[in-house]
Image 1 (cartoon, rainbow, N blue to C red):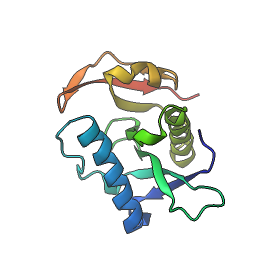
Image 2 (image 1 turned 45 degrees about the vertical axis):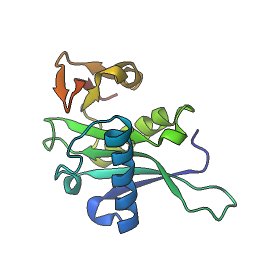
Image 3 (image 1 turned 60 degrees about the vertical axis):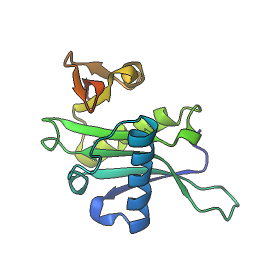
Length: 159
């Protein structure tokens, strides 16, 4: 699940070209190609976000580290009145072992360490409601359609 995984918490200007390419590629692979959803992923907000990259490094191997998990986080007032987490994504080949849960727990931890314990709002794909509920998020009853996919707003209270 999280063995050989290294977390990198970086501002946009700290991302290397390789890291930026890897995260944009992963987002495109999943959100555009896999989900068959044509939308503008590069929305002009990346420069205002903190980026959490989960990189798998094979122990004792000469393999190039692989980005397998990613989220971007915002302080309150950028995308919502609350702090927020978005673009939650895991590489398809890395799914099925709980990596998404490890990613969310790490994102919540990193966000709170950066900006303090506070409410966190997300715009979640509706079919992932139970996943996010496991991390303390509650449906706010505000469903909406974005890029042809039903989403719901969810908030996690601090604590």
